[in-house]
Amino acid sequence: MEKLAIYGGYAVRQGKIYYGRQWVDEDDVQAVASVLKSDLITCGPKVDELERTLCEFTGAKYAVAVNSGTSALHCATIAAGVVSGDEVITTPITFAASANCVLYCGAKPVFADINPETYNIDPESIKSHITEHTKAVIAVDFTGQAVEIEKIREICKEHNLIFIEDAAHSIATKYNGQQVGSLADMTCFSFHPVKTITGGEGGAILTNNEDLYKKLILAHSHGITHDDAMMEESPHEGPWYYEQISLGYNYRLTDFQAALITSQISKIDRFRNRRQEIVRRYDEAFSKIPELFVQKEIPESDSCRHLYIINLRLDKLSCTRREFFDAMSAENVQCQIHYIPVYWFPYYQHLGYKRGLCPNAEEMYKGIMSIPLYPKMSDEDVEDVIHAVKKVIANYRK
Image (cartoon, rainbow, N blue to C red):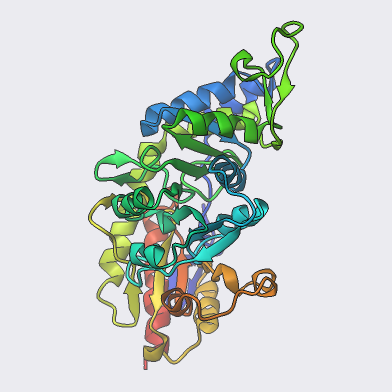
């Protein structure tokens, strides 16, 4: 039985409710164990199985599994042909990898502003940042809500740009009834432990374009090919022969991670439904509280949320965000902040980026706070979080 303490007049767990966590069950454990007992724990059949499963789930023609979401983004920028002198437009409200992958290629990240209600990149801001040097757009499905895919796709088509959808937050999200994963030129997933499904780490890139797929294969495995059609020397010596035909990286995924992710995909509908249930309960509880702003959602996106963000209207509260954060921690609810605008980091400042580039993003950042959201939360956990938010607001209400 869980230990409870009386906190503020009600019983709460003595352990914190974390903002996110994985749900690994016995089926997942057995899937991993079976691979560990097999002959091949990497470069084996489970990676191929995972890639087929991802294609079946999303409707994409091709999938390349890699060892992280960051590796997925890097491979996608390589496949897009991003090189020194190019520019790639992305959002500042994201994990740093969405921009770092551009720097890896020697190119320049350009930050477009966000829609202040949805928090996703604003297509109009994308258009205003296109130059003769723009090669691609990396649009991030922030919190799990799909970006305005149709508008961004049209912009990219008009300007001959590659559309990379950073879907690290949005596996199991649907856009106009279609699963995210086959709607952009390339779509990147992450399988980090707090995401909807996990492999401990891991990622994938999905595409419908065969030429991009071939480039992704080379990028994620040293630029090496065993494909006769791609080799420069023919005939070759024998079945052991391979060639390195480009500069690639060791971004391969292990078979035991692939087995875990494949097992997790079998539960993805359950995970998605539970996340949506919690989001509905939060929306119901918070949408009419004047001290909070709740993220809006476009009608095209049937979102599987990775994050639930409350935006504190600090002008209506007698506390700072840090004081609110600490008060939530005192209620045994661990929150987090997603994200600091990327170009605020010292590394980007040293590259010449200045504050003030994206006013909507910077204003939004001042009040945001992610509260717990993961499928293993019980109804009691959800109610505890709601109670904590309302209690802290009541304590600091002006």
